[in-house]
Image 1 (cartoon, rainbow over the protein chains, first blue to last red):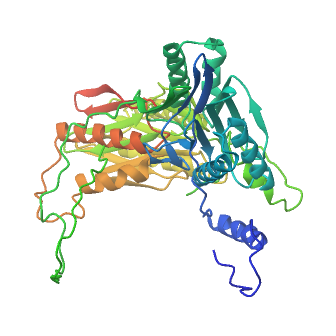
Image 2 (cartoon, chains in turn orange, brown):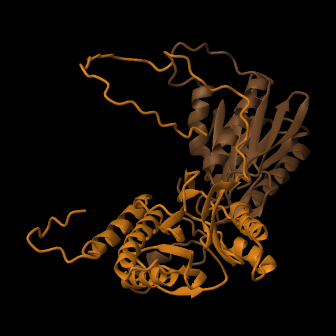
Image 3 (cartoon, rainbow over the protein chains, first blue to last red):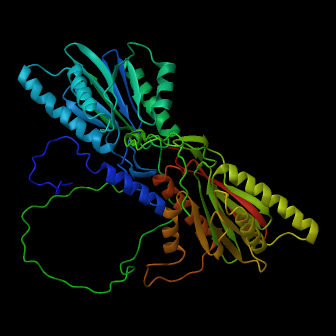
Length: 278
Length: 238
């Protein structure tokens, strides 16, 4: 939104709160009429992470909700930060996306400046300093995990700028169901297969017990050897099979007028990208 | 009619930032428990279907709480909205049916039940039952009948109607497939019981994909002159 009231003044950066009083009045007026102002889309999520024998495993569900309607059935909540560091994001979808992209960019520059591969603690410190600076207005809750020269680490960062360093973490609206699985079965220094199963089970608990989470389980396994990003590692909820055919014959939609304008163009390049019609 | 209900477990912690002064908090007597109901009327049958998920906020209370209630041998009602009011309302309807039977020595017809429900709901005009009702059954001539209500008793007879949380997703699909709306050059075949059943199952599969409150299982009640048959179909549980 351009600040057109005072175009000559230089932009001071950060958030402009000039419209907040007007917005509060509008919100009040709209609710009298029975409408509500548009809300930012939240991911309503289950994200989890554990530290195991060889590194860290991050897990996430794949449902993005617009209030209580599913907006995206297969979105990606595990974001790249560095070759050895990944981050799961919950809360406001746009905030999680942009915050992780900014961190990724900063961390790459920092790593080039220091001449050393990035540390997980660096990402967490920059993240929490930024989130605190915005006083909670950036509504993203993140779980950062990775393996660096000092070992395998797992941190969580909250919108107001606090962070935790723990061997296992869950966040999002499905954090409750997921943490109960971890509290029951987590042990330090688990083997890879056991650890994968545990994270998968925690995310599945969130998928079934939390209305804001659903669809598939994505896993990201980070070890000294490298990263394995397992998109759709598990699909515990299957779409029902429809019995009827719902195809329409050409001509079903009424064509009122038809105007054909031929464009004299040559095909230079042709590429095919498959749509996900599931 | 839209209700502004206090959503339990709202993650909207960001909202408290505009501190405009002392805020009065009030206990809300209502809560939204989700659920979708659907009724379709045919030539000699009626189908009432509902999902079986009972939720509150982001949690699930039960995966097996159907919203169809059998009233008489020829009438089934589907109620969704606030579960507390659904239970009380159905108890009141059952009691009134019994009273009518004892006074008039016959069962209430679908049309009579609909008219009575309208008065019961309007009786609470200033503290409404937060329930979206749809009655499905056979009328006096044995033809399928569907009556749809709003929370304060406005009602009308329909051929098909969807109510509850995913109603906005189901109704347009039914308008197209049963009402043949927005289609040209399509033969208007009368709706058979098999086609109606297939349609009901398929629309709920679609609703469960996109509405978080709809899922777990589908309970279908098929009302014919031979009685009421029940069918259960599993839905997505996430």
